[in-house]
Image 1 (tube, rainbow, N blue to C red):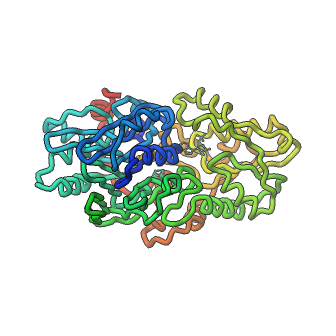
Image 2: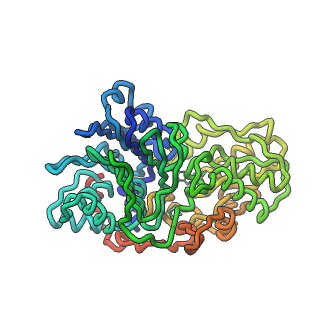
Image 3: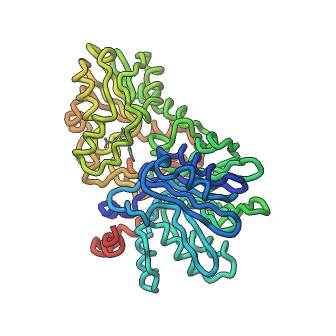
Length: 477
Ligand code: AMP
Ligand code: SF4
């Protein structure tokens, strides 16, 4: 399985700005708003019109940059990236934006998503002489662009994008242009905004709010935007294919104050919670949500069921997400550090515990135990998405098949393992209806692969033998 080798797996946030005198500061604030999309590294590249300068490092946005760094990054255009890498791909070189210099000019690039043919492309490029410095998919794109045969750089970029398969939302920066592109299935969100007389691009609209940018529209699948001193040039590099936006963006990943395709994420999650209450009614005294991503769904569940919503679980807001801890033991300790049950609220009560998803089952198991230790008489777990039975190849870390609880156990077995009195998931159809996308593509434009195993693309790299994958990326991790 490709996902057994995690070197190329990334979930990230990207930001770009053009035409603002303090572009680096804008990128800093934009990335800060996108911090939930990646906490392991951050970078900014800025252009002053003649040269590109970069600053990047491991850690949170506030740890990576200081005032001095930002002052040194003077310019009117910038791109930035926050990175969440999984095991193996954590080296400094992999922190984005990646920055390439050549006789024909500089190019910086930041990418959110995961390609499913990166290894095949890398193999072809290596065979014909390319030497790679990182394990990141993004470098593959840069090599393709550099090898382009067209006179125009834009044509070379467009042709390179056409060679890619999988999920990619990309921002690029040259000395004089900001470029943004989205894969033909639109698997990741990417929005366009206006800031002063310039433009901003962001993975999520919450980044626009903090920098005072006004949302204009989504970037369309297969579209490429070029922004420079002449304004914005709208072009396309490929015909859009059936839309397959990542459903987990709605369920878990995006921030509740962001909008995707004009629909507010908090409202979508509330609808998921309401639908969940309809399909899995239970007699209980209080509803509580697992902070932060499940609060909206829990509120929806409470509203629909008539069972009062209470803050039965409190999060220590100064601890990062549990997923960033690599081992199971550390992950379990992470959950303990970050959540506490409120005894006065749950003691002697039948509690409905709403969470957005079960991946490995670590979170649910620990929380059920915590609630029972705090005196809950019954704990009914309600999950506002279907069981995750398949790994994601498109850049969300939903783990490998071997680790996915629902890939290896029936719902009754899962209930038993996590120690709940009952366990229910939201059926796929109900989830799709609750998100309510107005899209004529199959599945209303959703990717549902981690729930169904029906991947919207061929999985090219998955057919490579394991030794080849090790050769291509393993040695560099
Ligand atoms: P687990 O503890 O492995 O079952 O993971 C489920 C918990 O992690 C839920 O509380 C989710 O909010 C959260 N979660 C779901 N998907 C992801 C993801 N891709 N990355 C990080 N956390 C996630
Ligand atoms: Fe999102 Fe799941 Fe599709 Fe991955 S497989 S892109 S997590 S919906």
